[in-house]
Length: 82
Image (cartoon, rainbow, N blue to C red; front, side):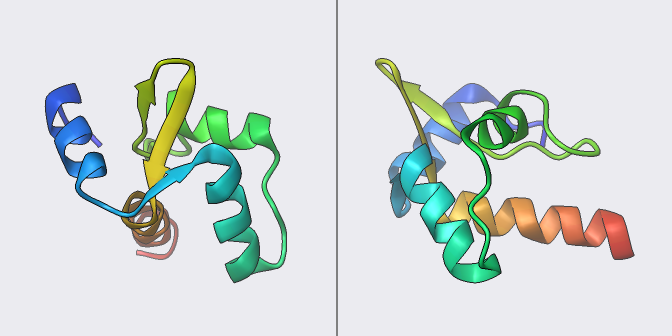
């Protein structure tokens, strides 16, 4: 996603905020498998197939949101199955 950092910050801070640990649990509740921490950080920094998981940094903590996870899954699905 080619979103500016300011837009990502504004968007995530108005959504249902999750730490990366909480995001891993959220994904596990859907899939039955909890992604590794390194997988989550890779999704944020490098992405998968051109899609990145939106996140912001507050101090030393990476923060994402339920809605960002939904957007990530939606875009990955669209790219993989058309």
